[in-house]
Image 1 (cartoon, rainbow, N blue to C red):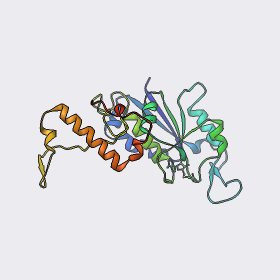
Image 2 (image 1 turned 135 degrees about the vertical axis):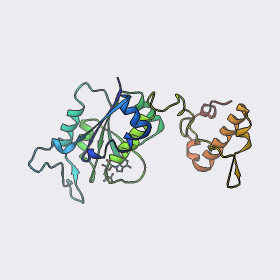
Image 3 (image 1 turned 90 degrees about the horizontal axis):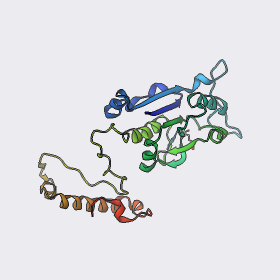
Image 4 (image 1 turned 180 degrees about the vertical axis):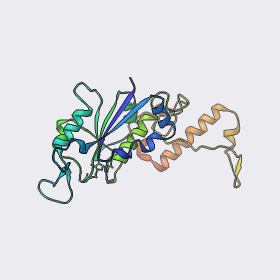
Length: 238
Ligand code: SAH
């Protein structure tokens, strides 16, 4: 069974967008995962294909109607579908590498993209939508957020990235930010590659990288170090 993503959106033409490029696009062409974007407006029932209405209680903007959205969800995700149903939302739990990894191990995802002021609360409850945020700022719609989520998940699927473990040592995977990377030339505008990296001593290189990771995390993201997690689980290197 391949990882299967369904998107419900007012702008299906935005997909696959960046998800169709590079290794993710190749993975899709190779049948490692699939993506289908569905136009929410197809589930409208009136002549004008209305999908939104004014907020109950007053205020600016429009709200996506629960009945139309529920119909779309039920169509792309009929009873028996075990995929998580996700709503992209600034009120959601912030997306983490850990959640991306969990999703990558599952059957796929059904992702609802909000627009305008958001969606009627009752459809969130009735269809048990898991709200996920990509950060503490407000976008105009959920489409780019859904792409961010899927890009983080799909690159973790087996076979999508070239080397099997090339994602293991990256930022967040071990609770730390990644160490600095270098490549040739040996000297760039007077700056040398740190000599330890060209020493050939793999133990020393591993310790240097771990040290750099710790320092960077302390400087930039001390909040990551405060997470309840033993320090030795943050590294494969003793
Ligand atoms: N009125 C809402 C914001 C609506 S923005 C509020 O204050 O919470 C319109 C849509 O964009 C949302 O329904 C959601 O699907 C998407 N969106 C905006 N910011 C987002 C974020 N940080 N993460 C995920 N989705 C977001």
